Amino acid sequence: MTPAKFAIPPVLKALRARLLAPAILGRLSTPPLTDTARPAAMPTSGEYLMIGPFTEVPDDTMGATWGSNVTGAVKIVSYSRDSAPGYALCAEVIAQLHAQPLEVDGYATAWAQLELVPDAYQELVAGAPVTHFPMIFRIHVHGGA
Image (cartoon, rainbow, N blue to C red; front, side, top):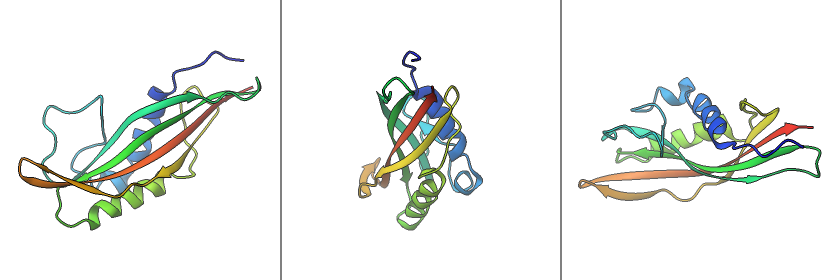
């Protein structure tokens, strides 16, 4: 059996690559952001996408394969007063990720699974309503024999 690997960095790379699809990127104010790579000034209009934070647990199976389950948030943040653009982007993110194989460096197989879509919620940022559309995905990665 191969020793445990830290899967979050290559999973994040694969998610960012998948979420840069033209159907998503063309509708965002900025490229996908992460909790660890935020720009100095956050967008203040339109929609943007946040990836993370993540958790990881080993998923080794009886010595035959090694891998991990990585669970993380993918969230659309919208400054629009209309919720339709945010929900449309959620649908596109789900279409790009759920039950789709991913190419994750260092792993023979990887795929994403939609775990949960909590209800959208609003907060006031500098007096402006901001709507969050969170989604939780589990990414399964396995290395092989």
